[in-house]
Length: 151
Ligand SMILES: [Zn+2]
Image (cartoon, rainbow, N blue to C red; front, side):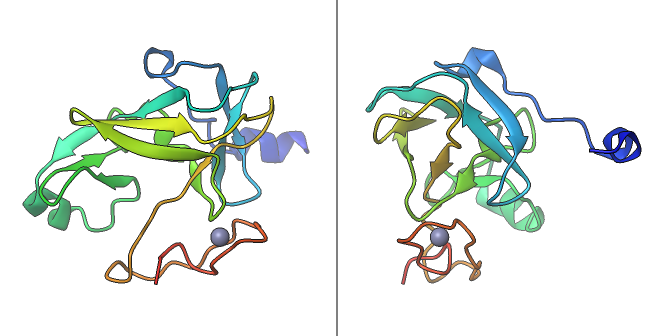
């Protein structure tokens, strides 16, 4: 990449090692914007990273309606990953994800669904439903639904 472009590109976001169980790194993604990549092999069914951020109420979420990194904990609480996020907020959606999210005692944990190769991009199914805003999907999977939303 030319030096000029390099100097104007934004800083690479950081992963907070306190919330990961494996070596991960952030890099450009073919899916969208930044992506998170395994920097070592990750076995199946292991906790990979916790999705952290500011915990906000339903009313506050409405106020931040343009927020990009919102994870609904339940019908009342949302975690806003743009505030004190661990880096998990940069994990892209895929219709054929290699991680799944589990909510354990109010914590959002991303767990590997299968063995993940060193250098593979981490993905999770955002599981938007038909009541959420329709978002086209570019995950590139042969199983792609065409939208991030489920029917
Ligand atoms: Zn897709």
